[in-house]
Image (tube, rainbow, N blue to C red; front, side, top):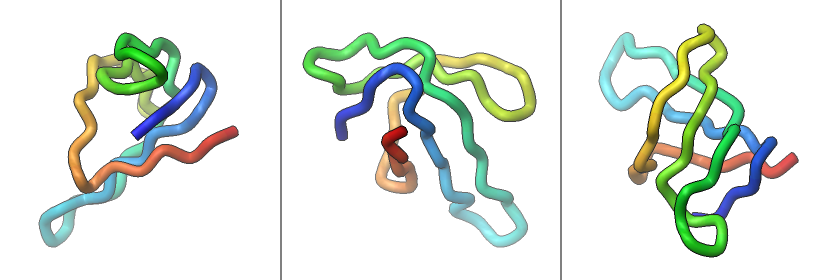
Length: 60
């Protein structure tokens, strides 16, 4: 998984009733665009994310 600043990270809900979450990647801390990423989620909070198999990077 590779990303650049400004791309979006989508995290699909993995249990029934859990909504998908998304946010903008504001910092890439891995080598050559790899994880971990600092993400500003759509609800306003910011967090460090090590994406799993339920995540997708949408390149902008």
